[in-house]
Length: 213
Figure 1 (cartoon, rainbow, N blue to C red):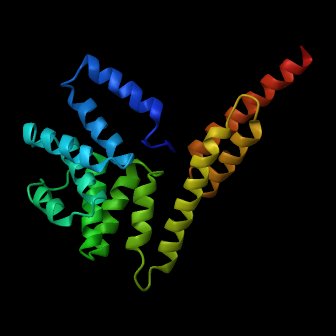
Figure 2: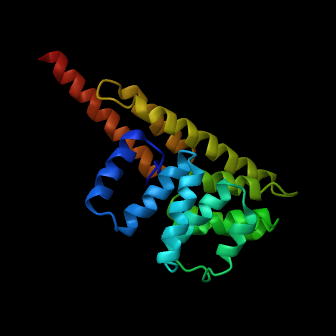
Figure 3: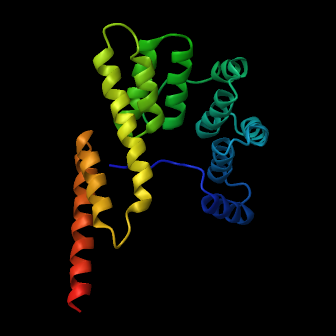
């Protein structure tokens, strides 16, 4: 079960630019570049690239999702709605970012049930998705849904801790892997918990062998 998602990292951006230098027309790379720019807060350049890509490939759902994300981050709901007006109906297998943007629009329109449905669709395929966990928490803010909201907020908080702690998982630090395993188990990510437990065991065994040698 994945517990990591795309974040803006300088080394990742550099690698992406190297790939683009070799294959400048690759749609996957172009969309990834837009998302990196958006994540880094370079929204003006991100918007220019996203709109250019959308004009060339208006039916590319990943590109459309990246454009919607850019409008969302700019809080430009008028432009968001213009792009969203041409969206097809939800279909299983569509980019999770597009589904999340459907949820953000529903939430902005105060359609909490609709928003919850979209965020839950993302979480069905990516349970650790932090934005959809937070979105579900916001969508569950109404009366009678306090328990659901609390669960979503708790899950988001634990996922945030996991992401911070991931950098501590080194070949000389089995405790970090064990801590993440416990946190994964706490929010029901059993497969991830087992993976990190096994990783911690492997590290401990390797350290013991090194000590004996």
